Image (cartoon, rainbow, N blue to C red):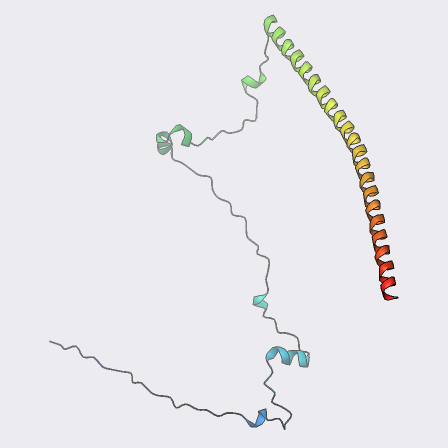
Length: 184
């Protein structure tokens, strides 16, 4: 059998306080007390360059482009996947397939339909071009009209300002005359 024994291994120790005021350096009779200069002040005074740690300088980070392998899904798992989740592995063909190479032979009714649609599209494109041209013309005319209006408004403002300054000048002249009469 064993007993548990607690051993106290620390003891509080009071540190004696030390107080020594410096009074003679602060006296008015001496040159004055100067504190110790810090490192920056010493470097400026002695004109020594600032030491630079080369590890602290920023360097451009060069990362190698990572290339990942293509995802490989085993066939058994791929068969069990829903259609939307199945990988679409379509390989580009070097040669054109049959559907690309074959020529489409239209009968007379199909030809008429295609030519009719081309004529309708041509008419529509013409209308769109005419509409665009009209829109640009109307925009130009509108800017001309607005320029005339703006010129007339600017002229009216100028005349109004001129009138206000004339009235203000007359008022100042009458005030000046009154001031001279009173004072002189």
